[in-house]
Amino acid sequence: MKAVGINGYGTIGKRVADAVSCQDDMQIVGVTKRTPDYEAMMAVNKGYPLYISVPDREKLFDKADITVTGTIEELYDKIDIMVDCTPEGIGARNKKIYQEKGIKGVFQGGEKHDQIGKSFNSFANYSDNWGVDYVRVVSCNTTGLCRTLKPIDDLCGIKNVRAVMVRRGADPSQVKKGPINAIIPNPPTVPSHHGPDVQTVMYDLNIITMALLVPTTLMHQHNLMVELKNPVSVDEVIDHLEATPRVLLVEADSGLGSTAEIMECARDLGRPRSDLFEIAVWKESINVKDGELFYMQAIHQESDVVPENVDCIRSMLELEEDSIKSIEKTNKNMGILE
Ligand code: NAD
Image (cartoon, rainbow, N blue to C red; front, side, top):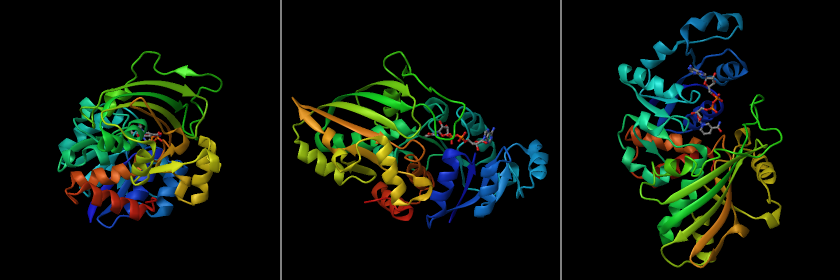
């Protein structure tokens, strides 16, 4: 069992901790918290050894009566790899520390590709990160784009992609973020950074993206227009996506015509935190016209990158050479639909 630490037990960190815990080739030996809040208490209740990420804040944990196992300095000595889930920009700074300590590091999409050196998506470039020391799992939006574009590229080749992404304004718990009543071109310039981000894992893909922020917290929504190299029918695309792991075809006709209804269905699935790790593609939206494929999809931003983090650890620690076997193992252990 490889020893994994989580630095930053927030939205992504707590989910990755649970996903690692249900695998049989890796285990969580500690998670870190900077603030003694309810998430810190819940980490202790779940049995995760809790370490303080900023050691001079120990008194705050004492005052909150939260039992800690030690400081992050002690955690470094116990792990093979740290999954850094700290807020955007902090991970790149932490990379230097991990290098000094001689431990590997997985980073999240808030970090810049150039600062980490390599980026990861389970389907696009698993083997390129074999044994690598520092790797970034691409963002929730980029993961969503890769999950469907990679199988389509495999099926019929892609000449170029145009995508318009409607992004959630904030995660459900982010009370200080917005917008509350506006649609914000974000960025107002074209292209957005998402296309180049996809190219950090699907290196030769021609892709241009535009993005908006809207007042919702549930999911992102993407609209894709894909010029194809080879002819393909709608049915072939549907069959191929249906057979693709971590992609779920949903039908507006069966009551799943919005992100709200898709997340209600995710609640009904009874998974932890009602997460939907799969990318939901609206079946009715899939159309092919004059060599161009059109489709719409929804992304649960808080959870789609979580299984990718597990596969990334497996590739970096050389635990499983075959990406498909890793994906299957992660899915089975996390209860992800086949
Ligand atoms: P978050 O704010 O929910 O969690 C971050 C955690 O790190 C918190 O527990 C916070 O207390 C802790 N922290 C803050 N400063 C720290 C420090 N100096 N050292 C150690 N820990 C510290 O953030 P998040 O949404 O989980 O985002 C983490 C990373 O994942 C970011 O790079 C983000 O861009 C990326 N990401 C977020 C989402 C999403 O929708 N939330 C999706 C995909 C990727």
